[in-house]
Figure 1 (spheres, rainbow, N blue to C red):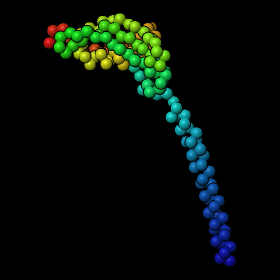
Figure 2: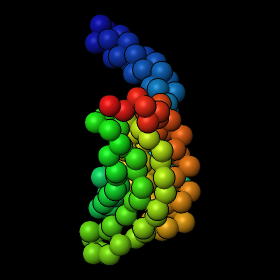
Figure 3: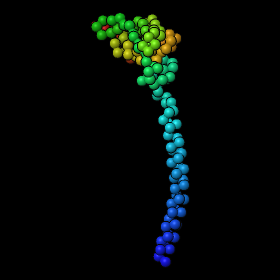
Figure 4: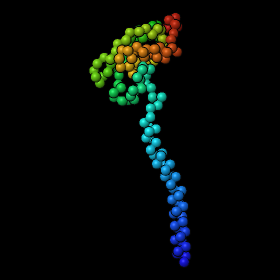
Length: 149
């Protein structure tokens, strides 16, 4: 008789655990289905560079490799003036754009703002639009010519 009671007790326990497992398994299945979507969703912080279209690819993606060369003219000992930028795609072995501009006198760290803003440009039009972002980003590095020794 004790065997029958323990069998009944075991069956009750299994039925109870199945009722509890139903919602838990459903929640687990929903979480497993949603996680890949969350991992592949674009983030607003995914923008690289200031140029339009800068979020097309990840920066490490070989399709997004561009070399940007910013030509500078020294002003005094610690200041420069950026005068032109050339974008080059080493994968295609071709020049993408050549843009002339005048950044004004700035500390040499301001050149990095121009390099970053133009690194995503694929055409001359993209580069010209990226110059607006570069000028804004380089504003903290602007100097008066008299401040440059």
